[in-house]
Image (tube, rainbow over the protein chains, first blue to last red):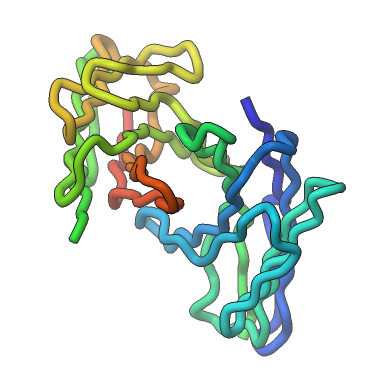
Length: 111
Length: 114
């Protein structure tokens, strides 16, 4: 199966930008996702990017995809305390039947 | 609209007892269904996925099994729980139509094996 890796922890000060990184192994992955998990809850889709795109921006969120390096990042501008959560990178297999998730990055926003 | 129900929300079970977690999806047909486990301090691990009734694929060998008796019902089971089965279990579904790209998650079941 696919290997998806993320760093486990990130701390930033309120108002700064956060950048969460993810690497994956299957170059045939077609869709790549960022999910947010708040404490004790399920996952909510934040944004996704199709593999033929390099960048996608959605309000405070910017997703960058480097297909050559198999690297995906999520940038959160003007990070707020409400952004504190675990962020999961996920990739869909080329058949679309399987989603593979990273370990999740726990983002702590310091007031 | 589509919804996914997962229950129970929390469960405390003794070692050696059986387990049955249920997940149902509404508002869609023939979804792909998934069971994930999130162990403490770790990421999501895909346990099982199903592309149709009675069709189960297992990603990792373990003490658990899954069944899909109906199109929109996915059940995670164990005959005898181990301490290592503790974790947060998430059910998810994806559509199978063109352009359906998102995975939708249930609220999860917190299982503590004691």
